[in-house]
Image (tube, rainbow, N blue to C red):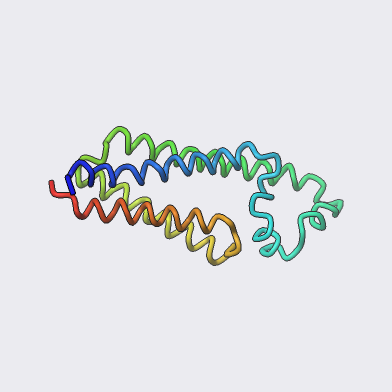
Length: 149
């Protein structure tokens, strides 16, 4: 395999991780009830349904609070995605230091997200996205190791 193809298989998957993060962030940012995107795992974690939770008078403004929290989360996920896209675009991961840096950071982020998802919301539909991101990261790492300078 040519070095150019290997190089494309290094930065391409990381660029897709960034695009995916922007997409997820946009979903959380603009969905009218973003907590419903992963309703079943959230209700399992809370051990009650959202309808029961919102029915209580003390929780009248809870939907507004959740909307703000999820929009903040969405904004952060968009920001991280844009930073990944920008870093990959600007550096093209042309040096070993740039590749090791971004792969190390993304590996730590993926481990942290994996810990949270599998320990607290294992029923989440986002586990599929987590597996996809792990596959993209592994692909990028593999071809980064294979690339001859």
